[in-house]
Image 1 (cartoon, one colour):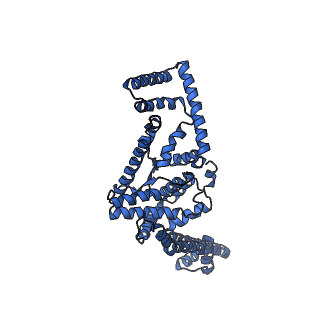
Image 2 (cartoon, helix red, strand yellow):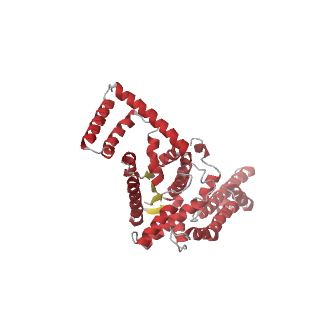
Image 3 (cartoon, helix red, strand yellow):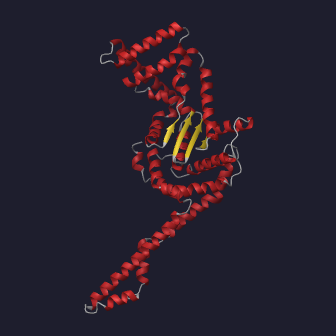
Amino acid sequence: MFHITIGTIGGELPPTLEPDLRMTKAALLYADKVRLCSSIYSTWISVLAKKNMSLEDLIQQTYKLDEMIPYMYHTRAEIGSALHANRLSRESFQSPTPTVRDVKFYIDSKNLEAKQYEEFKRRFGTLDLDNTQQEFDRAVKAGLLEIHQFRETENNITASHLRGTFVQSVEKLADEFNRVVTDAMTDSTTHPLFDDGTGSIVKLGIELGVISPTATRAAQAKQTQLAANLLNRLPLFDDASMNEILDVRRELAGHLVRFRSAIMKYSDMIKNASWDSEFSAEAEEVFHRDIEAAVLDIEDAVKTNPSLLELATRKLVGAPLLGTSVLSFIVAQLTSLPTITNLSIAASVVAGTAIYDAIKESQKAQQAVQQNQLYFYYRAGQLLTNRTYEYRTAAK
C-alpha cells in the first residue's frame, strides 16, 4: 500500500487552510492512503466541533473536562470539588429527567459556543473551517484519509489559558508535531510530503543531527513532492471538490502504477532534496523539459487516432467484395439464390470483417496511448477540464 504522511504548519497571512486542502487532494490522487498532520487545522477544528453542540456532545465534553480540571485548579480540595460537580452534571444529563439547572446550563453552553464560533469566523474567516471540514470528511468517510489529532490541543489548550501556561502548551504541541514529522522521515511504511515550513524544520533537524534520513527516504520525499507539484498544475485543480478528486481517482486507478513509475524516474533527475530551496526550480525544469512535452505527445496521439467510424470506412472502401478465399467459398455455395441476395450476404460478411478489424485496430491504438506512463496525468487533466463530475461540485 502506498501511504503518504502530510505535515503542514502554514504560515500564510491571513491564515488559510487552502494549502492543506490542496496538498491533501494531490496526495489522494497519488496515494492509496493519506494521513494529514496539520498544526492549524487540528488546533482549530475543536472550535468547529462545538458550533452545534448536541446533548451527547456536551456529555462527552464533561469527560474531557475531567482531564482538564486538574490543570484549572491549584489545590486538591478545589480539584476534588470540581470533579465531583462535573460528575453530578454528567449523571444529570444522562438521566431521563435532568435537573432544571443542568438543562439551563446546557442551553446556555450551546448559545455561548455558537456565539464564540461566530466571533471566530469574523476574526478568522479566511480559514473557512466549515468547508474544509466537509471536504476532508468526504475522504475520511471513504476510508482514504486520516486526520492526526493532537492530544495537547484536545485536552489542555483551554486549561493552559486559564492557568497562564499557554506558552508551555504550545511548546508541547510543537513537540508532538515534530515527533510526527520525524517519524514520517524514518518510517518505511509511509512517504513524507511537507509544506515549506515543515521542510524548514526537517532541514534544521538534519543540520543539527536530530534527523538522519536515508538515501531511500530522501528519494521518496522527492517523489511525493514532485507528484504534488505536478498534480497542482492540473487545470481547475484548485476548483475541484473532494468528490471530484475521489471520482477521478477511482476512474484512473488502473493507470496509477505506471504514473508512479514515471514520477520516480523524473524525481531521480532532481539533485536537491525536497526541503532544499532549489528543489522547486529543478522540478520546474523537469516539467518543462521532459513532462510537458510527453503529455503533449499523448494529446497529439489521441487527436490523430482515427475514430472507429473512420477506420471501418477505410476498411470497407479498401476491401474487395470477394476479397478472401473463405468469402469466395461461401458465395459459391449460395449460387442457387438470386444474384442480389448473394451480393448482399457477401457484402455483409465483408462489412462485418471490416468493422471487426477496425475495432481491433482502434483498441490497439487506444491501448498504446493508455500504456504511456503519463496517461494518468493527461487523462486527469481532461476529466477536470471537462468538469466531468461538476454535478458534485454543486453539493459542495
